[in-house]
Length: 520
Image 1 (tube, rainbow, N blue to C red):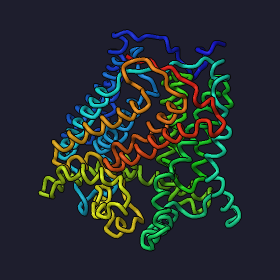
Image 2 (image 1 turned 180 degrees about the horizontal axis):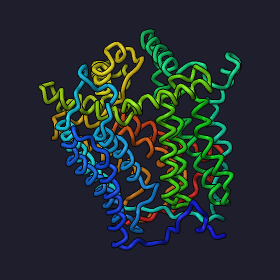
Image 3 (image 1 turned 60 degrees about the vertical axis):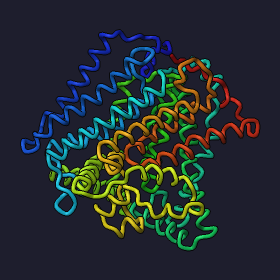
Image 4 (image 1 turned 60 degrees about the horizontal axis):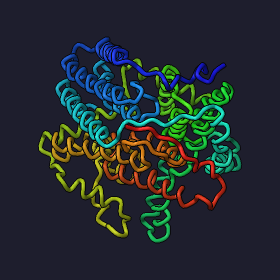
């Protein structure tokens, strides 16, 4: 069996014709139109044209990406695909869910009434952000493609993942051992809310005490993601080797590892799922391209589990069997009540609330937003006034959940980049922020020489670290500029510098092998 005939791999030499690309885009557009229009609540149908406009903008960005691609298609590992997935999850899907009659969690008379007019206005804001941010990214990054490895090259050149994976999973293993010693079980005995509140109370106490405790807290907040990056690197090499060997058992083990780790991790979802997504992107670039039908099928199953686990972790203290039953009952109750409480649906509520407040006369930030978010990179000791700035996420938490929850950090909602942009200076503020966000995302790729417009060689570790950064792009939509800058510095630039300094200090020269990157 040839490598190209393996069920997970496509031939990377196939060049899609212009006609095939147009037909593919039309199929996607029609499919998404049908998804949006079938089952629309008649009382909300006035927002349908704006929803279709938003879908058209999304497909337009996809089309530009396909026509820019060196082979006339678009790959799973393309950074643009991650942004499109995030746009769909946070911008497109919540609007369609609302159109179909769902009641969105946290909305209502006490917070914000979501009307067709308001949804239409928000979809217009989505179009502005998607088109401008994507345009800025296209302007910075030229089309590129990594020269894939043959099965023999992958087997001979790729580093062994065992050491990296062992180091990466040490924190989780220590938690499990402690759990076994104290509670006699490997599964969490407290629900995620209790775990989160305990962690927040410890952080609040460290801030109150100050001194060494506060410094330790600040340091941890900057390096906590290192294990996830190492997990992504190790899992990526493991997946590449499994594909190169055509090992179905290896792929099956990779697929079941994520839900098992999520069950053991105490309730974290993104921190567990992201390394596996990083691994998929690494495999697509090094030994792919991966076939879309398998990736989409896996994404559908994974997203279903991801959303169900959000309920499970809230009742995991009941024991596994009872927690599964409680999760099933709660999901069934939400379906019967047409209640949508997933993270994506709440995004629409957050946007609606901020747009309503600004339109009713709430003060806008103007240029001070950019100043405060850039200064947020500084430690509190150097810029004490940073604590006076209230990020949009904290503002939304106060309004939707309560001031006590926001100030003490015991619960909350994530931010919203559309809400941030609108609070800067309405549509103009959103345009400027979208331009900045798209440029930052593009410059992150250029930091490792990707998309520079000419062929070059990148070290394997540089490419892989960048690909561990790409799945974190959800913060470009659900956080603020300050968080994006912090993430860029501590999750990409510092790891790149660290990898460079470690060369020759530790064994593992295979990580520094050159990888060909084609561009135009």
